[in-house]
Image 1 (tube, one colour):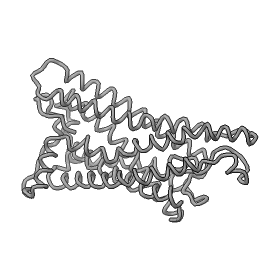
Image 2 (tube, rainbow, N blue to C red):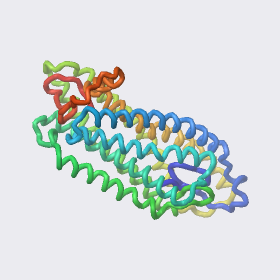
Image 3 (tube, helix red, strand yellow):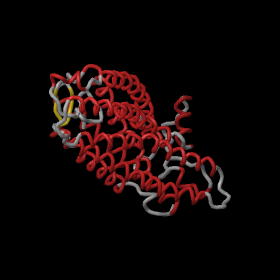
Image 4 (cartoon, rainbow, N blue to C red):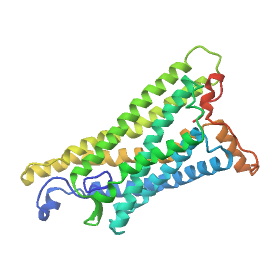
Length: 344
């Protein structure tokens, strides 16, 4: 949740000192200006790309695919969760420049929607990775071809967990000094560690599943296009860790400053303030890479597939046939054993 000591703004230092001497002790005007400019420009680009990519995914799925299959249900829900995540970005960009003047109810709702999208997206990526792993290692498994009721149950559980984790935003979010913030530093730290845990779990799942998939693909078989598949998996892992690794490391280090600080004189506080500024810049930069995942997911998890490329071409050429729907119950990756192209 956004807070004065949050992921979204650093308008106030977390060290204790008299407000009358704030500008003298810790002047972060340059940091704030950098954050406001970079956030506004980059988030604007991300929002446009995310809206275009994820809405296109939803349209293609609704028009051509069998939404009862678990694979397509995961893709559809990932696109929806990314749109929820994206919905919060314009508000944070606006808040960086103008402060929060939209009222406390809007503050709570925006935080809730943002975090519901954030956590559902993370959970879905974990489940999609596990699904791919099962599809490659045991393509005849019932999990691979799951449809109907099991698909609905899986989606309901995903969103129920995401809503539960995001719901504290309604209780512990408030507007203070024209900023949408959490009620205290305790909930800021709690939110940071939740993100860190999600990142660690995702990392373990990614490393285990994709390393096993790559080992399977490297076996001497007559499969075609294996090199392209391996490159794509490697790219996925690099993008994930480059995007989320630095961001999680930075917010973890920032969490230390949200702990209760001992009293100190103005000189000490000034030195601590200056020492924290490189971390503030690192936070803004790493956040840009991390939050761009909502517009990259459609590229890496959908449009690399043969089916979706074909559907997209049909739409662009205006040759789509509403009576023809692809009834495949899983992505192309499930057919890796027969040598088809890797698709997510």
